[in-house]
Image 1 (cartoon, rainbow, N blue to C red):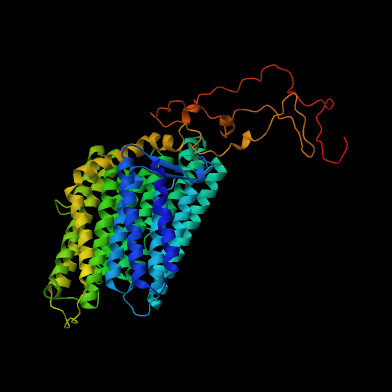
Image 2: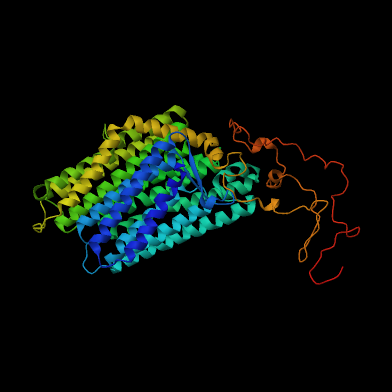
Length: 595
């Protein structure tokens, strides 16, 4: 079974982190071991990407059947996000190796850089692959621990301040997430995503709305949706180039992924769609206005990162297959392009010794290759055809135009204005950094060619997305169809819409009913069990009509127990359950005692 591969992107980086911590003084061995481990993870991710095109793949961890145990699920959405994230992480890691010192400062505790990078990768993979809300929470906490180490590496006052802000915001988000988890378990008795998709329709609508809002706020903080995004522009720019790049590319997209997964699978119907659309408009416009006002290129790109999260929320808000497909396509594009831009900014800082646009200039003469590497992803971010940014935005425009509601036209207007202002912001930075005369002579610093090669590799991936846009869009269309149907995901985790494929016993099947001729052993208790309902009916918290349990239009898998099961029939008249002949009433027999 290929399902065991689902554990590799999580387990292998964690094992690698332990090995790397054991060899802290052998930096070169650390570096290339980390690169080798992530290369293996990338191969596994690509395999899962192709296999998931035939349908979701599941793994019951420890062979404990869902919903009791933890499930890992690889569907089209999770595998395309996994493959993109591992690709970006690997390239940034290679960039770090060639940069020499991970944070660009002497004396930094670089022996923990590569282990922290491995743990970060494991946390991201866990968040994408888990089929369990609590395990998703664990994945976020793994991310928090590793990202705090990376963000504050070097121990400067500025990094400690921004790192503290990041940790406080992340802890608030985690607390809200944990509160939502507790309320969900209290209301439903499960945290398995597929099980929740079946059972949440039975919960009171008001309670469902509370849960939906709590999850949206928790993940909105992580995704940096306005007005929950003020922390990001102050936190990311202070870190080293590779760390800022991987944070910008991945961490906010984990939050967006969680929003897609919960809003579509657990809370279909779009009750908050108009509110989400309003947040998307505000995020796009306020983010890009903040970018225009910046005089540091790192902060400028941080604000564009916030702004373009609005495009991703746009596709979720319109609740159509075309909108979801465009969001997934744009997420892949944005992960690659935003990471590439921050890597190039790292090169700019290496060449000029600063990232302040006021102090930059003349880089075209000093490093023309860096100018080209900046120009291509900048145009893609601005939406210039035929690059991938243009294709993703056109998909969102078409999806909204097809609906044609007033909120859709507001989204279209905001998207067009944001795209034009993004192009203005990145071209202004291009002119100031590369073409204007530098106010002071640039330091005669050379940069490692490996850094240029790594950044070029990521830009090549960006161009590959452009050339392979048709098959990629076909894949994202399939991912959106799976998300909207919901049935493929639920049936993969719960084949009979009740339990997974593991071997864990049902708790209510553990009671043993003695036979007529059986005699209880000394030292044991015997008890006549009361007649009980079937395990399936005991799992239902209320006798809500069956029609609310099955997603609209979703066929029940062959062999699955019907949700239209009538009330339990009376127990056949066969007299009382046989018990050992010890008098009219069975009494517990205790070793060494008398009845």
